[in-house]
Image 1 (cartoon, helix red, strand yellow):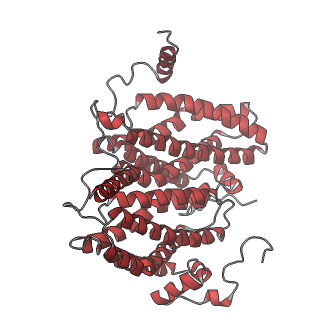
Image 2 (cartoon, chains in turn cyan, red):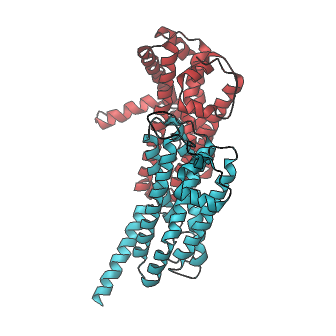
Image 3 (cartoon, one colour):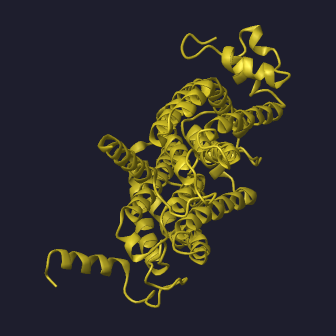
Length: 240
Length: 239
């Protein structure tokens, strides 16, 4: 074992224990992330990755239903579909660049291992979102402000994503990468894509006559419009 | 030292991106037609996908044209300068045969094209989120953002490809000084030809007021450098 760098994966016998089902996978990503990373390097990791993606889709659908309760009606099915699809598409769009940055950093990780680490990020993120779901539901029943709920969901998503990214960074550091610069660049790209996805698939919280927006916008311009609406609403309420 | 490898596998592009100079130098020492085909395939796919994302904002037809033109520029630049680059290398102190200099340049373009291909979904997503191309959009922030993103991505891919080429040349020649000299010479001639080919094969992003076409009607009238010179004169108000 080298005296420098992270401890090699699998040096603890507990890390070498197989992950037979999704419940154990959820337990492992929360309590034994190194076990998950070790298993992603073993033959047959594809099944584990598929299970992780399946749980991520289910969790994001559940969180989506909670987000949809803010407006109710068609948003009860539209919000979960948009959240789950948006998350998966964001990951798919960013996977090639993550693999390229991994290789450029000198890492020996194969595409399947990189895909597994990304699936781990999604799994951890969506499990944490489920943890936030009761809080989000309470607020969605007690406020009518779209901007406030949007900000709240964004904060929950950001906290969950940071934990997911920490897992991914941990996995990245075990792949003999010479530098983390490429990884940090990719993190910025991933965050921008995921945030833009919420604007591209709007409305997720509010209501609309069409499933997709009729006007194309970048997220900063959309946020600016939302804040202006909120500000206008506050002013008219204070006048009343 | 690794023995020269004739074996070809799916991890080769990964190894190329990681840039282990010793392994890659061994690849250039022996001609392997299958490896050559793989590298040309990566260039066509990677640069083609990126080109499609670039032209898509104007029109799907423009996307198809740029998907053809982008890899074409890379392949024509490599082929057009192959002889000159092979002559420059020994003249500047790197005694390698034609086959090796050609393979080295092709590999650096393969790295560049693989990076461009990996970024193409991101560019396509950016274009999908932009308002449709119109005279107003072209003067707005969306156009500037798309242009700036293209500049950053292409510059990153190009610099990375050349950084890998430099490592390979230093391994082949055993001297960083010689590698720097050869790289600068190759860069100079490749940029010279590549710029003119890009000029002939314009448009890439396209313009809302001009028709979608493979070549502009004036494709072969004037050249890139003449145009730059005229622009400079206009900036300095000599015209």
